[in-house]
Length: 67
Image 1 (spheres, helix red, strand yellow):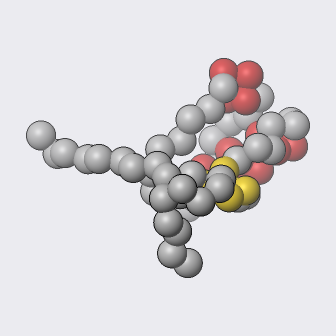
Image 2 (spheres, one colour; image 1 turned 45 degrees about the vertical axis):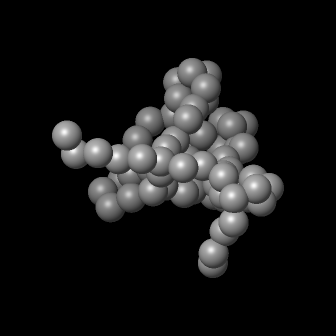
């Protein structure tokens, strides 16, 4: 799937590869777990506690510099 900047937010179950931003109540509601994809477990647990608004933002730009 190819996304273009300006497209609307896309609801997802779990999505990493950029930047995750969480409200403190959501983070306090769950814990990381599992062995392979611990963030998937975290997101499942957050959803079980009523924090199910997870989105991919096609307009987000993440810049990385190793220095």
